[in-house]
Amino acid sequence: MLRVEVSKQLGQFSVDVAFASEGRVTGLFGPSGSGKTSLVSMIAGLMTPDRGVISVDGEALDDTTRRFHVAVHRRRIGYVFQDARLFPHLDVRRNLDYGRRMNRLTRDAAQEKRLSEMLNIGHLLDRRPGQLSGGERQRVALGRALLAQPRLLLLDEPLGSLDEDRKAEILPYLMLLRDGAGVPMVYVSHDPDELRQLASHVVMLKRGRVAAFGGPEVLPA
Amino acid sequence: MFDISTPEWMAVLLSLKVGVVATLVATPIAIALAWALARYEFWGKSIVDAAVHLPLVLPPVVTGYLLLLTFGKRGLVGGWLDDHLGIVFAFRWTGAALACGVMSFPLLVRPIRLSIEAIDRRLEQAASTLGASPWKVFATVTLPLALPGILAGMVLGFAKAIGEFGATITFVSNIPGETQTISSAIYSLIQTPDGDAAGMRLVIISIAMSMAALIASEVFTRRATRRLHGI
Image: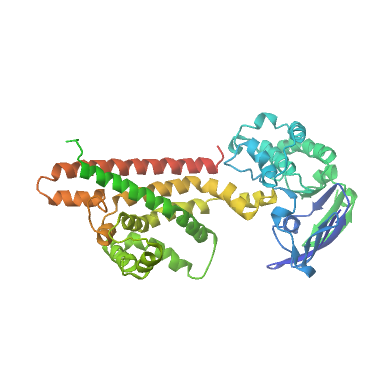
């Protein structure tokens, strides 16, 4: 379970959000500037809340009353960015392996194989990020995040920089991962259709506040 | 014309030794400084930045004289080093390396700083979400991405170091076999009757070394661009 109760002042803008979600995929929905990315940055630990608590499965990651903050690299929270952010100096194979090396995990050949089949990236392993299409890059980024064995995966508009055809190409992979990867996800999007297909719970944000929380039915038509 | 006599060889080899030592010692310091200048805002940053570039614009003889005052046997630092660690710079090849390191330092820092500034910091964020501690982020993302810039800086710094003249001769004089580098050997030869041919040989060698360094530096810079674009 993901529990978030945070407030953060960012210049003129403020985020003040509380929700708890048991869902396999929690959608964060809202127009740009509604605080979605600030919120996931706080969950990831890239940004610290001014006040509040963030916990995953009962384990606190932030608790400002105790001045408690778990550093980004110790949180085991995966993050898939809108721009895949693959390491340009490493080939696909070593990009995928990065999280395992950093966390000193033992190699899990079965999971590697399963994910590379699920994401259809097996034939890309020897390529450099610059030689991949946008959709391929995003699939590798998904694999890279999952192979670090996170307890929660944050996806920040992972389809945001892709055109409609590419979106249609990636969406089935995301549904496969949702059903097959066994990792709870927070999925950020401003596209209600995407969330209808993926999310079990939806947090609707407006100007840094929760406007609605519930099932996908809270999404606008 | 191309039978190179022993003193000339000694000057060439000494220049190479001085250049290598100066570059290897200066590089880690330059990386740390370039990192600080590229990434942090701190009090006195513009003064540090100016101080790094000072050897580029100061008359070399002034830099050499300041080194003599500081690192000479009776200098503040030089005296202490001699008393406590037995390290002597004055009139030794180590002093030549120190002078060359100081003179080439700005050439070393600049490309490294530029290459660190060119790195997309969001890649470092991505690395930390994958479990890399700040030190590992530096070692596995920042440093490899800056590597071509570091190599370019090292090559330029090395080229400058082997050609350095003014500060070196002021600080450690012109002692054959100890502090006589290519530049000071050329200087001596062209002041000696019949030294022209030998001087010319060293001139050609130094042109060749400098050209090679410039080309190598260019190659590294081009590789840096490719690396940053992931191809």
